[in-house]
Length: 387
Image (cartoon, rainbow, N blue to C red; front, side, top):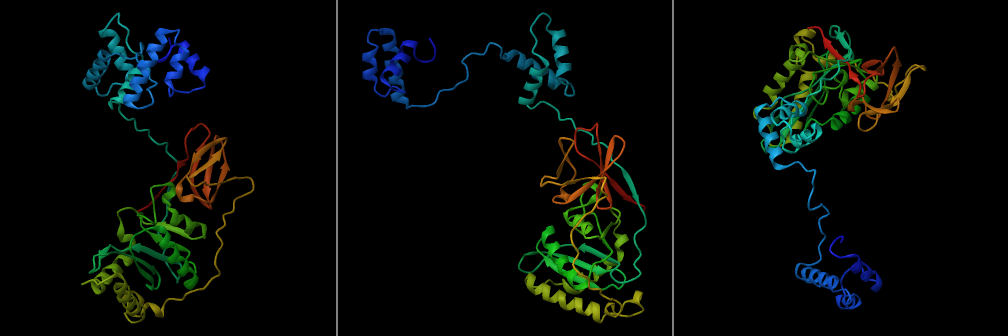
């Protein structure tokens, strides 16, 4: 007998053209010469009418090979006694303790450790990529050679809204190019601000930032989506050493003056605070003397240089292999998908062939290596600046 009905009952259903026992009287009359089948059907129909038609579980009522409860207790007890042991060591010890008994397999023990949440996560050590050293920070000798960029510490206006001041300054002339009060530090609004600045003042040769977002990241070469975009435009990105704000000391000093003169107390809302900050920027650039400039104002020293808008194009040598980075930060190489970094999404990267490894370049910047023997992603390059 298979299922709730015998083969005779199944034949009866097919004969009357029904998929279920909706017309039990007709079916019972068809199989009236089979009393056992009739009794089965009547009992099943009564049960279904009282409980409603529901799907039955497909899991078998009995699993002979299922791990017994006693073995689960033994596995749990031994694992808690030896927390660093894996399934192989646990099975070897169980075999010695319970000689002659059928001990569960290594894979079965591992599966139960996972279900009981007693397994330990093994942290895979990432393979080390190329270690690169950086030279000294660029000393600005003219306008638009180095821009310094940072987010001043956030504060709240009187209406309770958070304000994140983005500040951009020319290093040579101390000229404040922009202070925009933003609600957060997302990179897309920052990118739009820099598009306007590039159109008005031209492109700097270097942009100096700290390692925090949205300027830097923990990814390859420390680049983020924003700093990768600057790199595509041909701008060199200089990161100061982590924990060394004095490497951008002039910018930090400007922040202290700005805080003292514009935020104590703060304005009633962000729009009023922006108007107040704009007036302060005008005084800072046009009126305020600077000792480092011979008591001249920054506007007397700064010389903007308008330029045509640059195209976002990356070119590589002909013998290199070029791959465009997908939306998940991966490229396809040698039939497999390899992760290179989310900062490069939408841009092409160049693969320079070598012996058993390929160097990955983003423009002229080495960002990592792909080794043929590695099954995973790229080994990211790490850059460290001499202090």
